[in-house]
Length: 76
Image 1: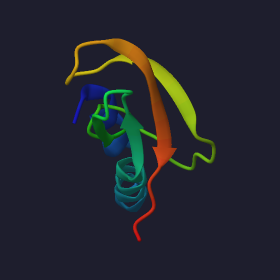
Image 2: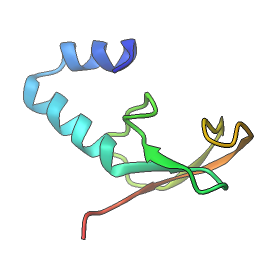
Image 3: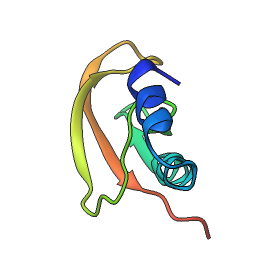
């Protein structure tokens, strides 16, 4: 958990913090090389969000700066 995540977790009621983390773990960030991880694991937060989007970022696997797809991955 990075400092920003820790700040929000500390300031929010515990139930909201758990909900924010759980939802952020459902949002995934995927590189063009196929590397994928959750928004929460990449240091971000995505709570009460609706739309998919893209982020220009460095991939820890391939080392390239590319557009990463951010999308909601629902459990089957």
